Length: 168
Image (cartoon, rainbow, N blue to C red):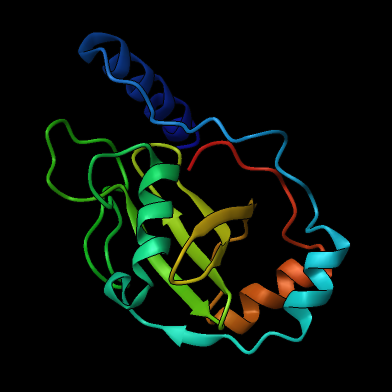
């Protein structure tokens, strides 16, 4: 049992080589800041984030931004509680990401989700958005098990969530 994670990792690598699969990544402009830059932290400290309970509840610009970040043709993220791929499954119709918590203010959206398909991680992405334009501002790997968007925001503001992330 203690070698199970190692065997799973080897299996994923072999599967990727055999099928020619690649893990989608997105090149971001410049390094991802870690922790959240002070000016943005001060702004987010005073933001009122309204809870978003599904991917369809996110503004269209944020959904498009996530799709770009994921490098996918569709918005490859399931709603909270829905099935998603924890382990890679060839030709699966189930997304490899699942929304855990999200919140939006009048100009920002904070999104916390889990990513499966071999590299099971939790990720936070912060977008600046308006009806006219949306841009990715910051992102990091996060701990598992945060329950609410307020928990996520506290982690971001405290610097506890600050590990740069390149696997979206």
